[in-house]
Amino acid sequence: MGLLTPEVRQAFISAWPEMEANPSAMIITPLMMEFIARKA
Picture 1: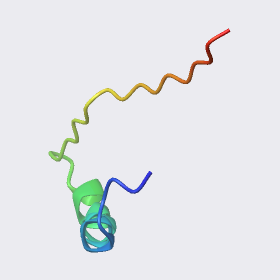
Picture 2: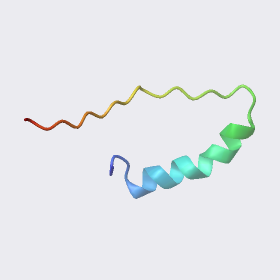
Picture 3: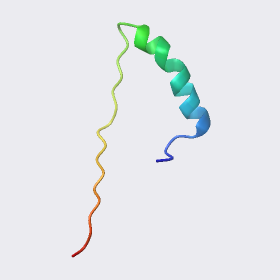
């Protein structure tokens, strides 16, 4: 969806294995909903 810059995306991907291995790490993300409608 283009919400992250390539640099931020790569930083996230690089940090993920270390965070995943940490038993006290937790990720909290906002709820995301996408509605697609068409007017009749």
